[in-house]
Image (cartoon, rainbow, N blue to C red; front, side, top):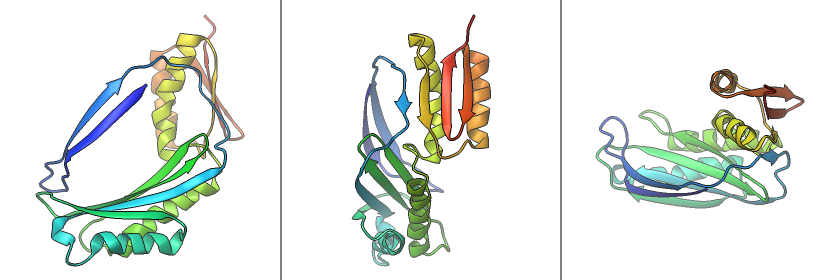
Length: 196
């Protein structure tokens, strides 16, 4: 499967106005076996701020906060046109077999440096988990694990940092829709097709 994402316009609360175009090219599902993330290739972070915040250097200050926690990241900042002022920072750690990420959203009254530090601390926790996916990906990948198990008859296994309430709820929903079973043991999430 291949996905192309194009940001046409950024938007921030309260006026919004953001627009993205997404093209999804379907592929064939196969069982997932992701228990090792491999060697770290790079950590990168990008800060985005609306043009309203350029004079106060908000995008640069978010990066300053981030690099106080994670010093060896490749950094980039950009200012965008948007109807309302706003900012966010997105980071990722790229490994041989996977990518993990963390982000943080700015808000009125919150220091830009604190936004950057929040994202960096979150990414640091994900890195220290040694799991090949981050906590936000766990509940998102569950439907794909189940579909792959149903279509191929082969189990999927993924090492996860934790099993959140969101993930547990998603497992419950998926089991109502598809004939699959999930097991979680010592950080490994298993999904297999249920015997009929």
